[in-house]
Amino acid sequence: MGKVRTEQIKRIAKELIRRFPNRFSGNFEENKRVVAMLVPGATTRVRNQIAGYITHFYGGIEAASSISQGEEESE
Image 1 (tube, rainbow, N blue to C red):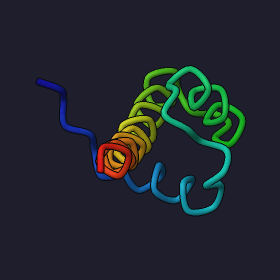
Image 2: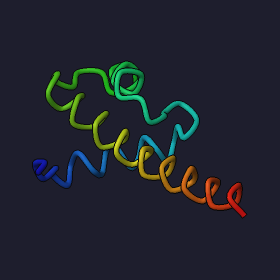
Image 3: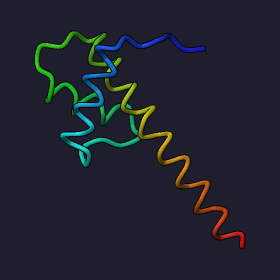
């Protein structure tokens, strides 16, 4: 079971997703590098929490789209 993220982490992550939707993906390492560029001065822990939340967000979208694509292919 994971830890609860603070509202600040969620707010920053959602704002970054809203402003830069094409820069993020379901890959944590890539998201970590992008967050480091976009949020200068963030500590390593905060950067990783933001990147992890974004990865979780995009992972859910990719998983849902792959499930729906799999259902279409099986029909």
